Length: 74
Image 1: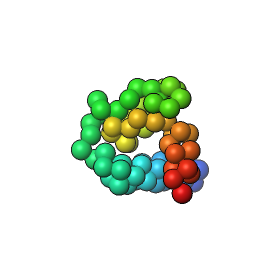
Image 2: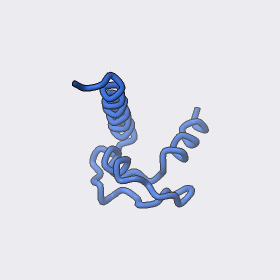
Image 3: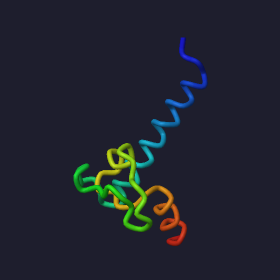
Image 4: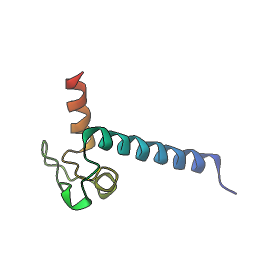
């Protein structure tokens, strides 16, 4: 039987994936492929994890830098 914590973690992962996909759609990255993604962040040079590159094809920044960019845009 699946533990409630496991189910919550799975749901959180689904929600994150959905949010990243929506962000990519709004940013116009939906036509991009995994190969279009940067291996390292264009801002801080930190490695971009494979999971993020798969979730947001064409991504050029790590999560931390993307959050800073979005905060600055507000």
